[in-house]
Length: 373
Ligand SMILES: Cc1ncc(COP(=O)(O)O)c(C=O)c1O
Image 1: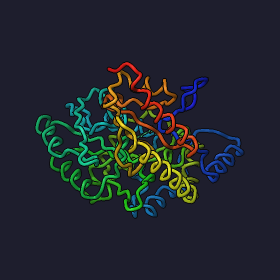
Image 2: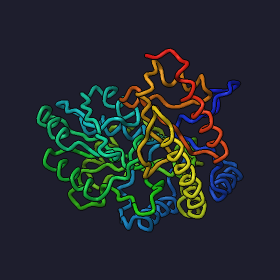
Image 3: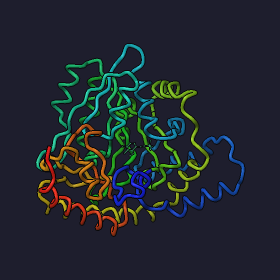
Image 4: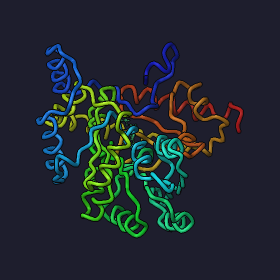
């Protein structure tokens, strides 16, 4: 998908959140081994696969979950939709989220016939933060809201939310009786050495009770095409509602996704560390380059391999089309709820990023020659 979009055109694909790297060797071996078995029937998660997830969460986050809290999913987007349909059933409700945000956060509530309330994040002194006053005001205006869709770490602004921020969310959710669906797909892609991912549900029992945590090995180990993800839902009745909303609609996870998940979680750590080193180098290179460019800016990326670029000062009628004309395929900020911005995926070889950054510099110079909005 990533490279096919611009096949036959001289446009570097830096859009969809797929990296250019082959999956870890341990994952590829596990998939080959499963294929060699030859029988590809319906799969169910095997005890070793479930254990791999439990071990991983304990090892990485000191998060001890019970096996029955796990609900396997073919993807996080599915989980976001199911969360909207299961939390807001009967008597309406509504969904709250922070923008800009990964586009399915905006589509899923609407497709579930739920009112969507968006509250903008604020950028203070080059640092993205939640606007707690605006979130409170949104709840005052819409007290029937039932679900907070929370992106943690945040795509596209690259924040690794810290304990005090999560505590605020937990207290806010408790006070307004909100379920928090925390999309933690980027949790193992923390780039800053002094930051750690803290699962929202791990804060305390009250937070756990009102949480649906969505996770997957897919972003970190670059295997989204294998379609394996899971929700962690500690509260039994919330979990039941979630499973009921999936029933008969959401397919089981395929057998390759399950073995890949186990291999990634058990044997992928060296590969992940090597990946983080490349992503940090790319992030630093990108930040240094953008800092020197007029008309475009970005904040420091703490997590993910996605950069959120403010191109509003360029006054382009169609930023994505303009950058495509300059050989760069970026994601459109308007899809994330912020027109004039673009998202750049730096999950690629450093040499390709160098090439892209040379094009970006030239593109900024060429703006002067281009009709403006
Ligand atoms: C925050 C976030 N959630 C979910 C997804 C996609 O999840 P999936 O491919 O498992 O549906 C992405 C992909 O970019 C993402 O950035």
